[in-house]
Length: 147
Figure (cartoon, rainbow, N blue to C red):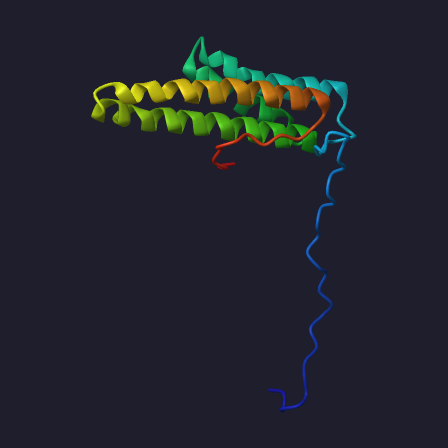
């Protein structure tokens, strides 16, 4: 036990490591200057997997998860875009499921809410794909951050 007045000094603690902010391009968007053309193309295809929803709904979520898991350790750029694509598609699935009881309770009138949801999906996918192709980071609107 230390007597009053004698203080035990703590060992030097290193401050929490902060990641430097990414650079900003002329459009005011954060981007990754180290992203290669292959990484940009791969990120673009991760966002375009949402088109798989037209063929098979389950494909739209499985494809970006697999693509993200394969490449997330190789590049922070691909990790960010993969995480964002998976979060967006999970959010769309949850919002779609939530619209089912609304549609039933409103005698099918609530099913018209699927139209803005699909517009959001289409516009968000296009904007994210363009941003990925430019090497920019992108955050989808109305997205729950699960992963």
